[in-house]
Structures are given as structure tokens and as C-alpha cells.
Amino acid sequence: MTQINNLNDIVNNGLCIGCGLCQSIAGKDSIDISMSTKGRLEPKEIKKISSEKFNTILNVCPGVIVEGLPKEKIDTKAKHDLVWGYYLSLCYAWSTDNKIRFESSTGGLLNGLSLYLLESKKVKFVLHTVTDPEKPMRSISKLSYNKEELLNSNSCSRYGPASPLDKFHEALNLNQPFVFVGKPCDISAIRQLSKIDKRVNELCKYLLTLVCGGFAEFTKSQDFIESFKVKEDELSIFRYRGFGNPGKMYIKTKVGREHDREYNSFWGEESTWRVPFRCKICPDAIGDSSDIAALDTWRGGSPKGEDEGFNAAMVRTKKGLDLLNQAVKEGYIKLGDELKINDIDDFQPHQVNKKKAVYARHEGMRKKDIPTISTNGLRIKELYDLNSKEFNLKEEEGISSRIKKI
Ligand SMILES: Cc1cc2nc3c(=O)[nH]c(=O)nc-3n(C[C@H](O)[C@H](O)[C@H](O)COP(=O)(O)OP(=O)(O)OC[C@H]3O[C@@H](n4cnc5c(N)ncnc54)[C@H](O)[C@@H]3O)c2cc1C
Ligand code: SF4
Ligand code: SF4
Image 1 (cartoon, rainbow, N blue to C red):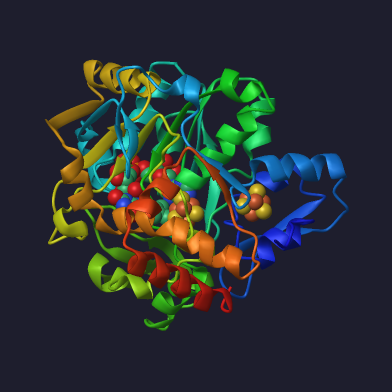
Image 2: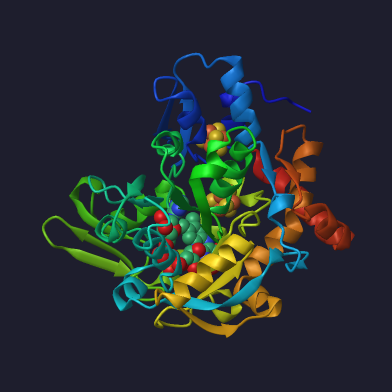
């Protein structure tokens, strides 16, 4: 199979998700990350990276390797599901703070937990993803030290490209406890890094994630504003959702013009999502290796209207369970009814389908001599073996036809 010999091989084979960890490892003087014409954040080597640094990148990059929950984090009481992995608790949950609940993506579970961690002084800061204040259609990573910093930056679902890990070493170098909140691919990169940098487990105390259907390339947002004849430099606010659940896709210009669109009409059919190739072959979009994964709870997978915001919490580790229980006890998070795996399947049919399909997609790549992601502990081969031959063949052939468009 074609080997990965440099950064370009990761990017050009459609394996890069733009997480920014390679830049964090090698430094901004060696790797630049910029928006490609396809609307993805892509790293580029601008100064030769040493082979030692490149080997480190190969061991952590989520385009190269993704693994499940580390064995030592699996609790003896954890239940296990072939699609959804390990979990200690499954229930509805949301922030008790009405403003957080309203303004956040679903019910503000992730922001609510982040706030609890800050105010209980269990962490010094939150490393998360927010709106770029200069260019609100773009997203940036941020270290937030208090409630105002955490919540006044539209830290809710940023469906466009982002590099949540570009400041990860900056965060480690501060030598202070912190929580990371990001996508499952970001979490798996951090778990890999923890194997070679012991500061990760010492300082990055919690790994919180969202169940992730993939991000939309920047061109989708560009088309959205252009449909209202608005240019990027005219924007003062750009929201994908929030201010309700799901809330509307919303923009406001510097001179006060406002436009919005219903969540369902922006996302519509899955084929119009414009997610990058890496998301289509994602072996873990459900936060297998996180402490807690938060998700939407719309029956059938899409919203029927607005509601107050009800997350589901999929608690994977003992650390995650203790955190959730403490945040409930201290009045930051409200728990609703317990949920069953059948409910989660119903909320996330696209995730169930992807987890079953992804190994066949990797097979399709291998057959075309395209490097794919090395995986372990994610159950994708077991699921593949349970699929019908027709299903697997369709997925293999489907991905082969997409390879040309990487
Ligand atoms: C790319 C993407 C795909 C998604 N796909 C699904 C899906 O398939 N199923 C589903 O149930 N929900 C999906 N969501 C929505 C999100 O998972 C839910 O809303 C979840 O329940 C969290 O809700 P919350 O109210 O707790 O989040 P909030 O309290 O609003 O917190 C959101 C957190 O996510 C972080 N974040 C936002 N955007 C990014 C980003 N691009 N990269 C890294 N971190 C980010 C923020 O920093 C913040 O900490 C997706 C979100 C994103 C950004
Ligand atoms: S580490 Fe992240 S940004 Fe760098 S090549 Fe891998 S996926 Fe892309
Ligand atoms: S689908 Fe997977 S690769 Fe794509 S953004 Fe989500 S977790 Fe990352």
C-alpha cells in the first residue's frame, strides 16, 4: 500500500481533518494551516520538519491512527455495545443555567460541565472552540479562564472547519490543569499523544466531546451568506445554531441586517452536508475514547421543531461519571430520564449506519492502494462481519468512486 512519507501524503489522500496537532507539535514556523480552495483547514510544511517530529506526528495524527478507549480507562462496571462502545451511564442531561441552556447547541451540557469545572477549581482553564471575533464565520481555539470568557464567544456547535488542537502544547506548557472539549477525532489525537507525553494525563484532566456527523466545508457557509448577498467582511455575527434548540442558522451584518434559515433547511439531506472525505471514513465519530460524549436527542435523527434543549450524556469512564454526578450535586447540571441504547440508535441513525459501513469504506481504499486510518478497539471489523455482503460491497464501491474527488 502507498506509504505516508510526509505531511502532504496525509492531506492529499484525504486523511487530514485539520485538527492542528501537527502544528502544535512542530511549531508555527514549520507548519502553516490555511483554508484551502475546497474549504478545509489544511497544514502545509513551510520549514523542513525533523524526522523525529514527523514520527511523533505519525503516532498521533487522527488521519493516520485512531484507537478506542484505553484499556486502563475501561471500568469493570461498564456496559458495552458493538456500535456505541463502553458506557457507564446513559441519560438525558442539560445545564441548569437557563441562559447557557438557551444559547448553547443543545441543552448546554458541555458548556455547563466546563463551567462547573472552572468554578469548582478542578481546572484552571477550558480549551475549546469559539467564533473568531474578527471573522465570525471562522472558528478558533481558545483558553477560557472564567464564565465570561467561556460563554461570550459562541462556544457552541461550530459546524465549519476548525483546528481545536493548534494550541494544545501551549496549553500543556502552562503546567496547569485543564479540560479539553472538542470533536471525537480531536479526543483520539489527545489519547494518542498521552502515550508519548506524560504531561497529557497529568494536566488535561477531562476529555469531553460531542457526537459528530462531520463538519461542513467552508464553501457551504460562503454559499449561505452569498444567498443573502452578504460578504464575509460585512458580518458581525455568524451562528450555526443555538439560541434555542436547535435554533436557527443566523447572521447579522455590521450595519444590522439580519438573515436566518431553519436548521433543517440548511442541513437537509445528508448528501448536501459537504463533509470532507476524512469524515466519511471516520472510524470514531461517537467519542469512543472520551470521558463523556454529548449528543442531540431528536427521535429519528432530525428536529421536528424547537424545544428547551435536552442533551443525552453518554458517560464512558469513571472519571466522567464522577464529574457528572458532582456537577449535578452542585446544581450545574440537571439529569432527566435514563436512556437505553435503542434510544441512542433512534437519535443517531446516521452514526449507526456509519459505524457499520466504515470498515468496508477502508477496505475500498486499501483495494485502490490509498492509505487509510489504522484502527484498534473500535469494533468496526466485527460490525463489518455482521453486515450483508451486498451492504459491504456497496460501501466499498461507493467510497472508491469518491476517492477521485478527494
Ligand atoms: C462538526 C459537528 C458535528 C456534529 N454532529 C452531530 C451529530 O452527528 N449528532 C449530534 O447529536 N450532535 C452533533 N453535533 C452537535 C453537538 O454534538 C450537540 O449539540 C451536543 O449535544 C453538544 O451539545 P451541548 O449543548 O452540550 O454543547 P455546548 O454546550 O454548546 O458546547 C459545545 C462545545 O463544542 C465545542 N465545539 C463546537 N464546535 C467545535 C468544533 N468544530 N470542533 C471542536 N469543538 C467544537 C465548543 O468548544 C463547546 O465546548 C455536531 C456538532 C459539530 C460541531
Ligand atoms: S495532525 Fe491534524 S492537522 Fe495535522 S495532518 Fe493530522 S489531521 Fe491534519
Ligand atoms: S466525523 Fe469524525 S473526522 Fe469528521 S469531524 Fe467528526 S469526529 Fe472528526
